[in-house]
Length: 140
Image (cartoon, rainbow, N blue to C red; front, side, top):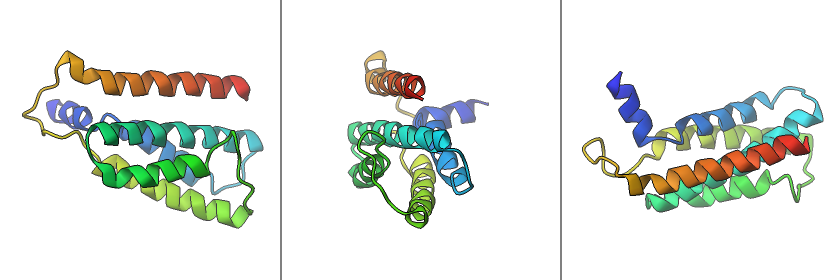
């Protein structure tokens, strides 16, 4: 059981990234417009938070793709693309978020234990993501 907790400690973004990927891949079906609004909000918030974590952890190679994903699925200034292009973007975005969930991890391995000051970045990202999610659900 400790191995699971160690793995989640190294990848605190795993479940949010997995949730985002599943929303994108399930979006390939036919859903009401409120579902896609939720997908846009989640796909803007979670990749932005993961990009901030990647910046803190100095894993810069993933940041441009995460920011691009957040910009494309931005619900505030929504892009008008055709249904086929959105389905392709759902597949690409879902695959990218699955890859990010597995590939990005906290530097230092299991031997490096995190101090209380090291929790500032993940807690800040979590609180901001939660605030944006509450706002998004309120706007639905």
